[in-house]
Amino acid sequence: MLNTEFFESEEPGSKALLIVLHGLGDSSAGFHWLPEVLQLPRMNYLLVNAPDTYYGGYSWYDFTGNEGVGIERSRRLLFQLLEQTRDRGFPAERTTLFGFSQGCLMTIDVGFRWPERFAGLIGVSGYVYQPERLIAELSPVAKAQRMLFTHGLQDPLVPCVKVREQVKALTEAGLNIDWQEFQKGHTIDGEAEMKIIRDFVRAGGA
Image (cartoon, rainbow, N blue to C red; front, side):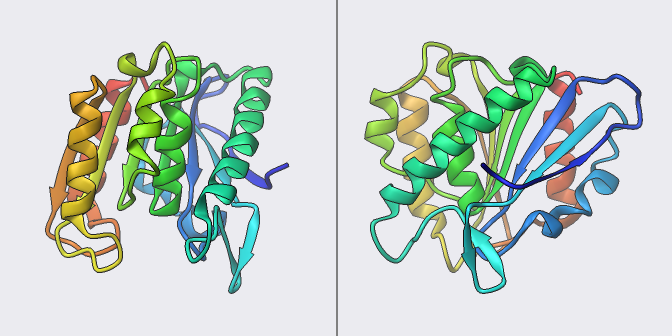
């Protein structure tokens, strides 16, 4: 069971939902600023803590060892979370997954395997775990998913050139990924990047 924080929309009864997956060593508290910055009054927010503790924060998997064990465990937990949010009345077609760094990897890993189409997938400053395996395990609706994937040309932790090649392989396999590069490091690049994210979410119906 994953620990979460829920922020209700300004518009009563809205079923639009943004699920936020943080990066390594962060927590749900690291994204408390997001609702105010995005300025989407119909959006509910579910900020999720990763399952493993990591130097005062949390992680989705152990990047220093066999990362696949943690990734596959976290995938199962996120599948359970998506089932719970659906049962609470938030359908996939009104739900957007948003992930930064490790959370970006989990957004891709889960989003293109989930059997229902989301309103959108957003990944920032992450990479793809085993692209060939992901392509082999795509859900029947994966090629109908929309994804915005942003990355920094000066990212010292996840080199842009490597991720660009991974995304190329996914798009050649038929996935609908909007790849955007920024002059930034391993971070979110202020309002310039937030505007692209906001516009992408609105295009999904938020």
